[in-house]
Length: 370
Ligand SMILES: [Zn+2]
Image 1 (cartoon, rainbow, N blue to C red):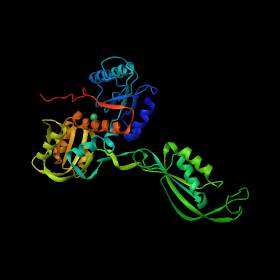
Image 2: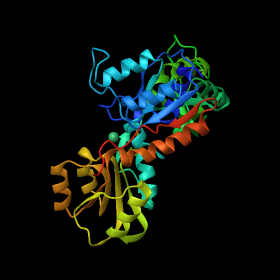
Image 3: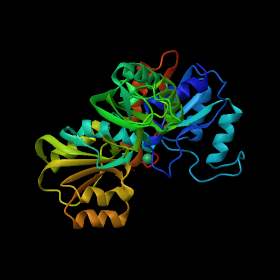
Image 4: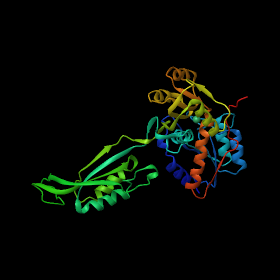
């Protein structure tokens, strides 16, 4: 499969628009015309991961962490992340990133952690993220032409909803009476000019992604019988209760912190972790923050969460959590993100045909207990 086609499929699975504004996701480097038959998945791009990609003849590395986050104006083969990108390009290996967009989606890094912990009741993101830019298009159409206008706007890109747009041709309509008064220069499709006319119309509503607005409006105008179609184009707040950073919800049954820590260690395959805050109590409302909790901790503290699983926490945030009576398990940045990549590998393998996805064995937690 060509890299350009593969990128489109990956974009449908984990849309870049779910990422935080500071992030750098999607295709980072590569030739869109290049053929890809094998992808190596890893949390980080390291010399070991790149060597493995070469050895396994992968034409793409799909990473969680962007190797380039800051604006870069030099690409030199030296000992920094731009050197690794240089080497990847040199070896015909494309670099693709799914980072905070993977954290945000259903089935992403945070969802997988929540599942491992047994958070099954009222599971939702801690903080919603913007999911793109959509408009509601409201058109007023004579009933006889409503289907034709609907077909035209659907064909131009309107009416698709849901993750990966699994539902298309979505609309709503209801009837009513429209009025107009055309001056003598007009030639209305219904009634006459120079007097007020009343027409039975349908109010036809549908959704349009921002990028498709020009094409959809042109299609609507072309198919609509009126000289001057009446329509409203309303910007929508792009929030979806299933897409956001972190996850929070209730455990099937409240458990002691001790039990939950045992569950985490077993699920993540680790022997130890760090705990901040109360250790001797029973908890029912649990949150996750895969990787680094960073500035999401205040959002967690605003909820009723009694326990948080994260990978990494700054000293001052740790003190704040303890002060607020939140128990926080810190299991390692990479360790809390790798299960999401494992799930992603399975997901791509079943959704994208003709491309083999393999998890990197060189990719590992850089901080080890000793
Ligand atoms: Zn991370």
